[in-house]
Figure (cartoon, rainbow, N blue to C red):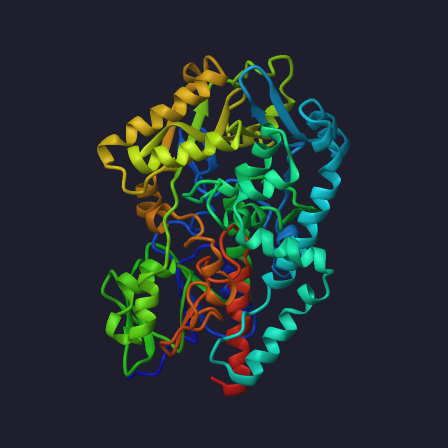
Length: 526
């Protein structure tokens, strides 16, 4: 074998790949990132989708990006700026509405219109979520222990469990509930009003092709609240310049640290020699030799398409065969000639800076999933609309706007010839609540699950790179034996959202993978 050209070759220039490259390069390693598209960022990109209209074309809002990574990469000093939503969510209900946010007192006053009991218990609910979210925050930047790691791994597991062990018994029960039960069961135990349950239950459906009745869906709800914006836990916000601004600044930091980043460089396969990953073969035919291959792509396409099956242990390949991925997400970017007017709140427009959620109750969400399973898509889909141009006027011409639509549920196997029907169902649903919306549409960009995979490499449109269920979390993400970022194939590592702590623009998998590599390098000096 020729001498390795690199210390690390990273497949994919998404935010986790860039984060991993930064930490490794900063430590003195020779690192090169290979991005298939013409632009870095993966699914966190800002692109012009119509003349004069720019938007975050896939990932569209921020909360989960780790403060440590923001600080280490000096993103704020480079120009990273986030505007918090003044209100969290606005739910048109067909004759009424629910506005969440603007402070706890304002939210309680809104809840009291539907249930005084729900309003009274709201502070306790927030406190419960924060207790459990604290457990996630504590684990997010830790390397899960390897199941075959012997005594050191057992000690590490015990250390990581300390945070939960210190919780009172009641809080331990809360953790168990949120990790195992359905969102409906959780919310039924806390609230009596259907709109209130819907306001919180929506998060359990985001990127999760399942009903809120599915066991484990409560965790998906929790996963969306362990972040923060500008130091405020659980908040979400708009990045000025779009989500691509994050990855532009990450790429700048990685390059300054010494990493090389190349675009238009799709990887065809991982080169394996003697049970060891030794390089990459690019689609161009070029082969690159390296000490380590690090994958920022989803584990399913990595092991299905790029890694020879006979290079992996049989039991590992079988486990990966059972890895579940594929969300029912339909993502659209809309150029608007003006602002939509919702008939349930016509007098003001403060709610238009919130996440506009069309999903008035849990039964609606349940029907949307089951109809998609039977019909391929829901005729009454779950829709979230954001209008980022209200806080960032660089995204659209003056007086015009861009809207991000994130919709559930569309079956990843929906035939291509029926995808237009799914799009029409979304527009029909919005039109019902905001008459005249169709007339405002100047241009639309549609990303079905099929297109999300083709364009961004998201297997079956899965925004998390794999289902966020208890069997695919922590040391079992993606499967046991690869949960600590190192795979059974020597020299092959994982740094994407298919590893701990999972999906969202967190940077944590990239940070943790780099930490694990540097820890190993310290001992083995390789």
